Image (cartoon, rainbow, N blue to C red):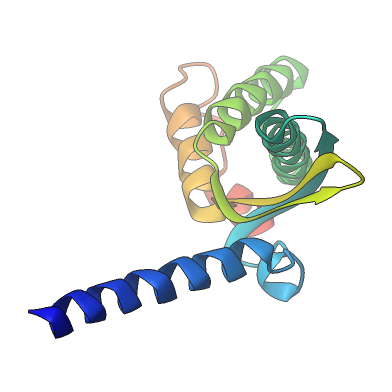
Length: 160
């Protein structure tokens, strides 16, 4: 029984140690950059309060990832040769809506908090699946009566 308790305590201590190390590891490198599968964005924030620091960093990263998605979608929108000005404007509004919806689903893949000069500094990296974002945009377009007939899905997928 004593050895069982010892093993449990040892496992708990190692788990906490690993967790602490993971939280202090830098959020940099290629695994935290946008790639073929994920949109990723990083941000840092400084505050007197740890929670506020984390919120600020997450909001800044969310804003950065929405700009990435919007820029990619706007570039892909130019592939839509069947769209007139009205359709293109409607499509851009749809992209804005989808981008905000998808940004609410982002996943924090790295968070590093520490104290510097009495303030809390938090680094955050967030990600969203490119496939999920693309599917959501296409689903919204296909459900829009004004856009679905002139939407060239193949061209959009290729460009996105």
